[in-house]
Image (tube, rainbow, N blue to C red):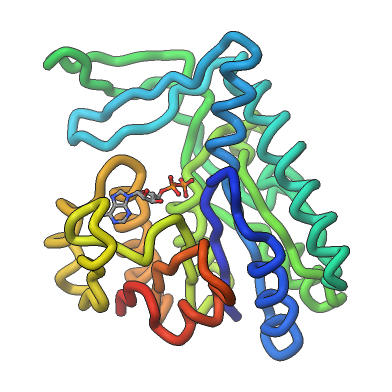
Amino acid sequence: MILVKVGGAKNLNWNEIGTDLKTLSEKEQIILVHGASKIRDDIAVQMGAPTQTVVSPSGVSSVFTDQTAMDIFLMSYPGLVNKTIVAKLQQLGINAIGLSGVDGRIWEGVRKDKILIKENGKIFAKTGNMTGRVEKINTKLILDLLGSGYLPVITPPAISYEGEIINVDNDLAIAVMGRELKIEKLVVLFEAPGLLEKFGDESSLIKEIPKDKIDDFLKFGEGRMKKKIIGAKEALNNGVSEVIFGDSRVNNPIQNALNYAGTVIR
Ligand code: ADP
């Protein structure tokens, strides 16, 4: 089983991604997980409530999700973006079914109402955050869908044990899916050839990262890239055999990644 995760860029080439998904899904079970961050940010600006980001004491940035941000999140991730992707894949002859982590408790976990943030050199607690962390996967539902010939297209948010909607990190959620579904390979696509030693310099691609050295590579990731590296480490600790970071912009992006054109971590 292969899980393909596509980032939240605005201009993804769904013809290429979809064509690859169609070829691969004829011989393998495939799950697609996607983000929608850029479109969410655009809608947030249009609605006069721009996305707020906060930085943890260790320097990792994340989105602060209050009720307004969650409403916009629901419009963009499981709404506009998920349904657009599903329709596109259906046009290509893939029997895609789009679900958020809330549906059937596909992604379940703890809510973190209070988070520690660092602002102007000071560390303090901020409450009212509708985010959390996925711990549990409804594997039966996913396996039932795969067994019935559907290609699941999954996106945040998730649901807390108490039934609240929570914003979660995709890159960490897929690591939990890796464990619970015994996934062999994770393909993580974004708008770069893979992890670059110098962000912006596409000739500085890191071809291979041994899993016991992964912490040494965290320093190369800027912004959300750090989370992808942390997610890859968790996935490998959870029993996934390979995580491949690949370029979403090229022709045959998934097959290219599976042929190790990007960064392979194992
Ligand atoms: P998401 O999947 O959460 O939507 P993005 O696609 O924005 O996240 O995150 C990946 C982005 O991180 C890449 O497209 C790239 O612009 C950026 N990035 C930061 N540091 C690096 C790096 N060292 N190598 C490659 N990309 C990097």
